Amino acid sequence: MKFFALLLAGASLLLPIGAQAQETAPDVLVKNVTNEVLDIIRKDKDIKAGSTKRAIELVEQKVLPHFNFSRMTALAVGKDWRQANPAQQKVLTEEFRELLVRTYSNALIAYKNETVDFRPFKMKPGETDVTVRTQIHQSGGKQPITLDYSLEKNPQGWKVYDVVVGGVSLVTNYRSTFATEVRNGGIDGLIKTLQTKNRSLEAAAK
Amino acid sequence: MTTTFIRQISRMAFIAAAASLLGGCATSGNPKDPIEGFNRAMFGINEGLDQVIIRPVSSGYEALLPSPLQTGVSNFFSNIADLMIGVNNLLQGKPAQAASDAGRVLVNTTVGFLGILDVASTMGMEKHEEDVGQTFGRWGMGDGAYIVLPFFGPRTVRDTLGLAFDVYTDPVTHVDHVPTRNTLLATRLISNRAELLKADKIIEEAALDKYSYVRDAYLQRRRSLIHDGNPPKEQDESAELEGDNKTADAGESAQPAPAQTAMRQ
Image 1 (cartoon, rainbow over the protein chains, first blue to last red):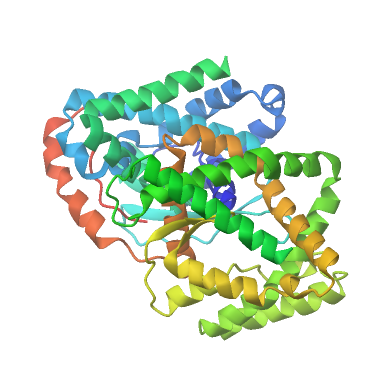
Image 2 (cartoon, one colour; image 1 turned 180 degrees about the horizontal axis):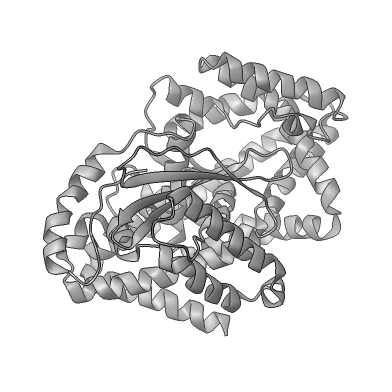
């Protein structure tokens, strides 16, 4: 089972998608941000010392602008999303974002020394929904971990709405857990669970 | 030794069954997980086993053994596994990949000093990941129910059947000298676990409910592996979510396309 953990962890390596002009092609975007963030991570003294806080700052600054978190949250919540009112949707998105950012940051720290390959990318003209595929190499005769980004074109440029590590979507992997929470405590129950989780992680990090 | 091991495993399963009866069936009605009560209990036992023995030993291994040696150990077992990976690729009708796997074994066993160096990867022969459960999946067998096995952890019914074949055809289990065999099995277990140590924190912090997080990741991962990384879209999910678009778009205008949730990848 634990090999999933590795896959999940690997994911975050690539997450970063840097501060580029809006019309940057999606594969170039993924590549630039990945390289930029990895470069910083490998050099940063605090991150080398294991500072999650510093890694979170970096992810927020470099990666977040390229993610569409409201779409990610809608995907994770699934069909219950429509029962949430706009205010609830907003809180859900904020809390889910915090959880994902922490996951990515932890993974960045854990897997900063692995090498990343960018696989060939082809896009038809006019396409607005694409997958950029990358791979993380591992030593020890292991199959490389695939790390795929789903991006869609928005008026603000290309935005990532899913990250799939070794075939596991970091977003839809929450769907059944979220559905159970909603069934037991409604949308507010899910919000409360996410808040409790995030607050306890914040407390532990201090 | 083997009988003792099997006895231990049956005992773990018995404890889990008892625990699930006592605890009432904590089932959330997931159709893929009809025996969730038992599975949760078994998952807890496996976690306990990991915390008490496997993780501490693996941490020691990781801390004490120089990293090139760890890579060597991992390569050695990976090379042994390539044999059956090749056979499974052949059974799945992928002769080119099977040939590459055979090439890997040939190169790594000779030039790579009995598999300690993974020369084949540097020559461009890519490592594959196959097992009998995947082969059955490829042949069209469905998943069956999700089940957490004692010691081995998450499987489906199909993958449990596959696991029986995997264990039976595993060259390591056929080493006659019992102390050598046990040493090899234990070393492989620890080596595999050590590689995943750094992922522990990520999963712990990512999961709201570790049991279901691990279950759903397992199911997604297997689906992806069976289709060699290109699983077909899950039609029912996307149809279900497509409907959300209109509803949510009307309600929220602050952000672009907040609920455009057709599942694609």
